[in-house]
Picture 1 (cartoon, rainbow, N blue to C red):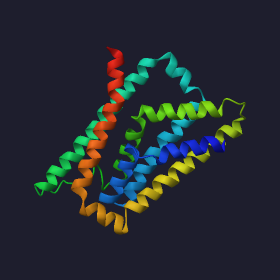
Picture 2 (cartoon, rainbow, N blue to C red; picture 1 turned 180 degrees about the vertical axis):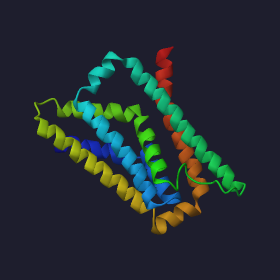
Picture 3 (tube, helix red, strand yellow; picture 1 turned 90 degrees about the horizontal axis):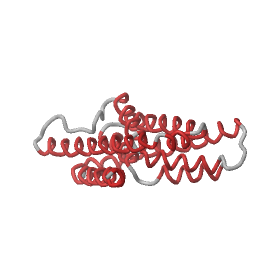
Picture 4 (cartoon, rainbow, N blue to C red; picture 1 turned 120 degrees about the horizontal axis):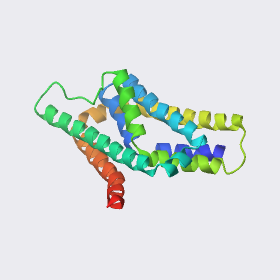
Amino acid sequence: MFTAALIYILAVISPGPNFIIVSRFASLGSVSTGIGATLGICTVGVFFSTISLLGLAVLLDQYPAFSKAATLAGSLYLLYIAYSIIRSVLARAASAPTASAPGATSFTKAYRVGVITNISNMKTIAFMISIYAGFLSSPRSDLEKVLVVVLCSTLEVTWYSLVALLFGQGPVKALFLKYTRQIDVGLAVFLVAFSLNNAIPVLVAAR
């Protein structure tokens, strides 16, 4: 159980779209919007952890087209987030009042973006399936299954909440705000590269 949780949290803390979303909401909005994005991300984490233990891998094997379609849809969404970030950079350059993170002032919108961002990343989902497949390689009781989901989810909530707290106040927030334009361009480039890295293998395999 603890081995699965360790692998899970190591995957969670590696830089990716989820980290970008939480840190950006917290820095350009507030700690509460960062927490909103965190809860959205972790809601999806709990959902896929649960269905992974119930046999998601079997379902994806039976319907491989679903995984491909979800990967492409997720890549398009990440490209949209990158476009929104670049649009906000250009708006700030023109002194427009709409320069903010997508939904930065709304806890509900931050939650929704967190959900969509995490659910659109099929590589994360595939990794979660592999973690729980290893966990299920030995006979497990229902209590052990519940406990591993609770443990992994608690670690995920804790990590992203700490990210929101770190980026949402003090010197880190001030630094982010000072170099918002440069950071945003870098984040947008990362999201574009990440989404293309997901989508291109699917498109090539479909030819």
